[in-house]
Image (cartoon, rainbow, N blue to C red; front, side, top):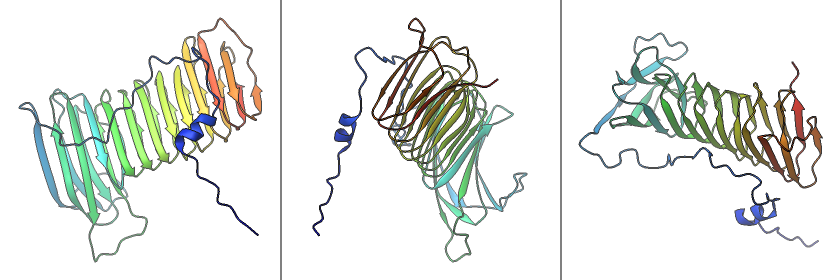
Length: 314
């Protein structure tokens, strides 16, 4: 029996096969721009910038945080004029919470002993960048699934950017703009306002997001976001997707691209939609009437997956 190897398609060829929107179908002038978080953290310093570099072994500090045997306080300072923070790590879970005071606090935590190889802080007048690298101590017992957690606490109004190569990201209570990227890890959200941009290569995106502008891209992970209020732009390449609006939008642009997995959008029953579906061999379950004069424009592009457009049950 003769066998033939299937030629691997390039990204450009795969995109060329997807159905395309007609000119003027979905113009998103207010898309959330994804900033480049792959840039250097040290950068070019100016007279108004201060740089700090700290390294050392993790110590067992007195702290009320439960479940972690080893804690290392990395940074604790007044906010001053700083309004945004950028964090870049490697194999670390990042958890961001609201600080009750006007301070920035960064702490590394783990169940096993570890060493901080590099902790880099670059402070500008209104922003701060943090880079963190670690290693587990050799010759000591370590759990195979052990991870280091980076707990970051900032004022709720802060803008936040997090990029991690291998680790989960959790954001709770932050009201500023969010830019979150994880190559391999889940992203969990509980955010109230601002703009949200999320990208993950292999991991799920879940939670409550009341941001007025949401942009999501997932290559191999499920997406489940609730609490939406207005604009959404999403590209889901290899997982199921579910989006739910809690409030009735009257002026919104929604564009979703999917491949072969199911997509479900749930909106309040009184929502007036102006929709268009561009699909391949796709089943569509639509509970809404078409309103050509509506400012809530919905465009769904799907290769093959089931599309469900549902009315929320009160």
